[in-house]
Image 1 (cartoon, rainbow, N blue to C red):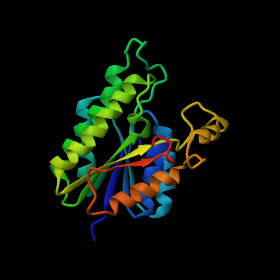
Image 2: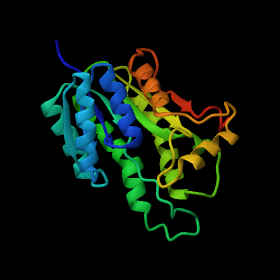
Image 3: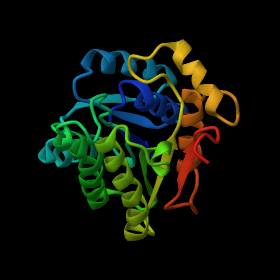
Amino acid sequence: MTRKTALVTGGAIRVGKAIAFSLAEQGYDIALHYNHSSQAAVQTAEELKKYGVEVKLYQANLIDPEHCHELINRVFADNHLSVLVNSAAIFPEADSIMESLGDWDSIMGLNLRAPLLLSQAFVEHAPVSAHIINILDARINHPAGDHMVYRLSKSGLWHMTESLARELAPNVQVNGLALGAIMPPPGASQDHFERMAEHIPLARTGSPKAIGDAVKFLVGQDFITGTVLPIDGGEFL
């Protein structure tokens, strides 16, 4: 029986790690991508192996277009890859209309161009019945002045998710998850995170399990594509 493999970009920490755990629980071997988080990647890999799956680590700087194609080729050379999760992203604090936009290239390169290039390379080798899942942000449909370039990159990725779903059908299903308050923002306290529940209709914040359950649902479907599933407790209705 051919073992199935999922590539999770940015899989060493935070959202990517939660997704990797969900896929490992379902029996997927994991191709775990990281860039700078080498220590965390090794630790995450050891934890994932407890599910009885194979875990291979792949380092790549996805802001570099050549690294995107090289990563996909390396993973396909080692595995039977059938799921691509585009999770790696940049969320800089200094990102507003009043800033110099000095991070434009890196934000757009990682958050928008990399998922496109990875998807292009993926479909060149992907088997029939493959999945691409893009990680989005639920706040995108509620415009605001904060994190301007980040918002633009995720808006583009949302549109790209729907466009690729049409372009790559019927062999590849492309869906997205639009995340709300799932875990504390980098540098924020747990208390700050819990206070965010005051603005959420369900009166509670989410958890990594919510992401994992959504990924499990999407890769188990054969009749859903072009869907962006909000995981936000109703905050951005």
